[in-house]
Image 1 (spheres, rainbow, N blue to C red):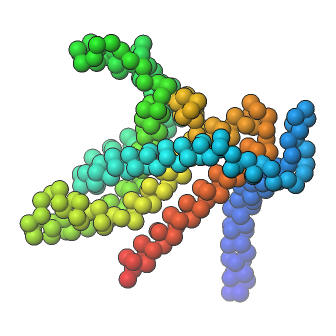
Image 2 (spheres, rainbow, N blue to C red; image 1 turned 60 degrees about the horizontal axis):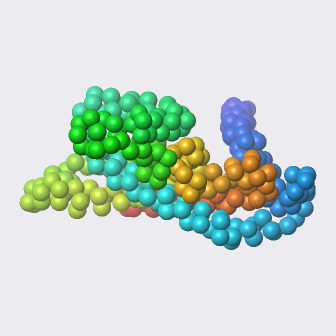
Length: 288
């Protein structure tokens, strides 16, 4: 009996050691190397050399970085708000459909997730172009005088971001929305509330924690997107992820790019940790 228990304990240790090893090899190790490089010193004629300087982090307070950071945060918050605002009523209606219809929609959303960021960016670039874009259809319908090009531009960038993040937002809201008791809205309707008032006064407050968690996760996801701002946006609309690539590849300033990446990673981890805290509070509140 004791031999069987010992073998079970050993097996569990091996099972736990594998994800720990993978986490160390593919996350902790690369992050440690990136953190070390962020303190290296750039050499104009020789790439960079090992050192321990804080000049790369001091550059984080330069006007170039602060302007780019402010725009990246603004764009991330805007995309998060738009995505959640569109996904929330859609998910609510989806959760009230028949199970067969829900399955079809969920399969469709998962198929959209299979599209790469490159395909999405170039598709929106063509769709919003002046020569082959949707504005030509509006001209043919007589709604516009002449075709206009929206890509590259801020509008095209926001549309590309929202198209990319909308399926993720729906899938994040769907589990909580499907578990929402329909008797809550029925009780509100019985008390005389209209469907719109029941939605805003009952459904939204009940889904407060999932909404906040979705906003944070979409915001974090937006910070790491690289190709959409580069293809659909102008240089003044490039985000922090594009600035990191520009510094590392085109400016050959790997230490500063590493410092930017460390800052971006720590910011994302802090926001993800906040999401876990909100989720734990929701579970405690539900249990009580």
